[in-house]
Length: 260
Figure 1 (cartoon, rainbow, N blue to C red):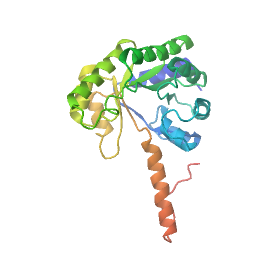
Figure 2 (cartoon, rainbow, N blue to C red):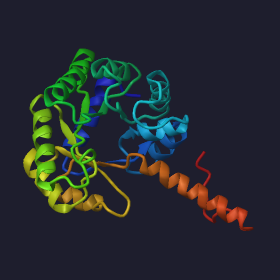
Figure 3 (tube, one colour):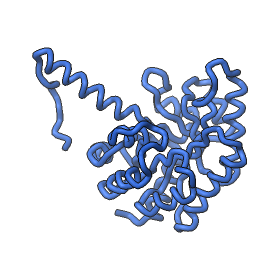
């Protein structure tokens, strides 16, 4: 496996390259090795929601950090590609959590702002970036704003978009390489965010049945698209469908592959 600094530089280069970086989020060693062995996959990202669910915890920093990091470390050791971790909101100390993640081999990460006061959110971004510098790596922080996630159903759309832009620009200004704006699916919002942040600075999550295809996001200047908890839901849907078919007297799906 390449050294930490090389993996970090590789992950940063993938975000800055002309082609969009697609990250299929993983949650344990077998999901990580299956995705990493898929042709065209160049990096991995973990999904905190999915890791928490694996151990029976609700999302939102309910899984103990030690347990979360243990799974992420197992994933890092199992693959030869750079790994980005979902740091959630930093578990109360974003800089220390980032340092611990780097210690297990992580070279990038998401950090939620949870719509905290902007100065606090910016300070957390700076703390994570400082942890990367202290470790001698270009830590690829995917600075997340929850402007759309936490907006009230009747919130003024333009105001929500404006808040996402303000926060994203603030994170970019202190050195975050990219900004993550989950729940954005409309083409006009994607265009507005790319215009505000610049090309290759926006990252999104692909929402089943709602998001634009990755190739279209690439054409619009999006840096990265990931899958969050949805890939685990894809796997669980297939599992439930197979169980339903068996209970009904059928058989397992034709074409099932020996991937483990």
